[in-house]
Image (tube, rainbow, N blue to C red; front, side, top):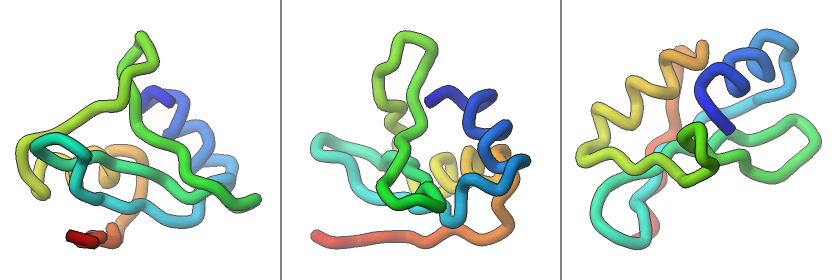
Length: 76
């Protein structure tokens, strides 16, 4: 979902958590946990998952959605 769509979901309390995690390639992705379960990734207008070069840039996107805390998942 795009940043605008995610902001709307946050405003209607549909999103409960923001997570930054390593992407399969280089960089980091931002995902949001929906209140009904499952993760919703931040994408561009074409539907491609957005990838950021560092944790700080990815975290800033979660802040843009409205979150004040972001979980950093480092499973590798």
